[in-house]
Length: 509
Image (cartoon, rainbow, N blue to C red):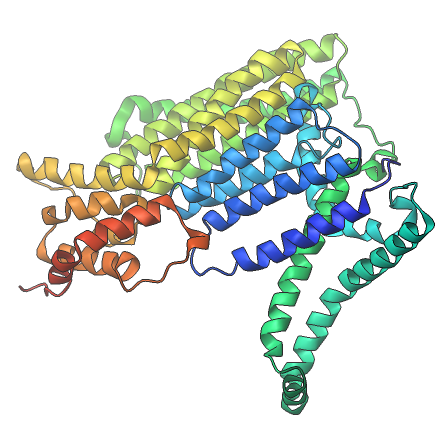
């Protein structure tokens, strides 16, 4: 660990403040929204307080990553999709972990993939265990003060650290004892005159959140590098030319064999697939797409690992790696093309969904990474690949929020059904009304505006789902406010009478 002393008072004040703020904000019913965005803002403010009290200035890069984290965190108050909210949370947490690795100093521009992974993992480790460091006096910052102030600080620190350390076991054991013995619970409740179960619940959450926040802030103050692992001195072995060629060559052959089979389907169409007993074109597309996305996603880490084992010196091993890895990159792009062809065929049969939209976007992003790998790693610029992958990943998340996959899926389903009706198609597109009814707030304005396009049963099912989720009787709290949810409540509220009439219709009406 960095020998720099920790600003204990600032860490404890900010960390415990985060605990109380989190206890209040996170108790709102429903999905995460404004509460998580505010917590990220509180965490950024806590980092600033701790850094200023620790006598260190955050670099422009660190401030930029904190700003990026705050921007990505606003995704929690933008879209109603649970998956997009999850992506917003994960990406914001990742952005906050980057400046902590080197205590706010600039480093990401020269980082490798392993450094970025270490930054995320180390922040998690320090959040979970970093508060233990606050129990050691030799970790505290030194200050020249009068004896009385020094004694008062010592007492205050002892009380705060002792209470913080005891808070979790007190809450856990207290809750167990209260549940185990009703007489004990009644005596304590009569003694203190308030609900001890509620107190234990709040105390436990405050303690856990304070512990996590203090651990992260302590790590940020000194840097979160996992130096203990680095002292082991392990270095990856360097492969010989023949070893690297055999390993990459075998994988290339597997990829090549798969790609050659795909050409039959690219040029043969549905008829080529359907000659296989028990296999339809829809099944071929459905069962293979996500596997190909996973294969493409795993192909890049495999090539990064092979690159690290070949070594950096120019020579036969490096030359053979470039040739074989370049071949594999071309084959990966062919696999991407096959996956896109499959999903297009599947969408023609079954329509768009949020999952298929997101998976296609991820696949296209992976194709960009494949090209970026060739432009950087194969040219000896390994570290440039890491930064490009990180920035493009954040860009993908922003693009998904901008494109609104849930609303796009609803629009696509309705447009497809309307087009078939207008053209009097022999086999109309089977509109999945249950899927439309299950969509979240992002799709609600579209569903309300076009609900008359559904049949009586479909209108009843969708109207009932919209009223149940976003009607005037629904519960909401400002702490989990979300723009998409607010719009859904407003739209449904303005059409409550019409939607109620539709919901009361039976299929035979």
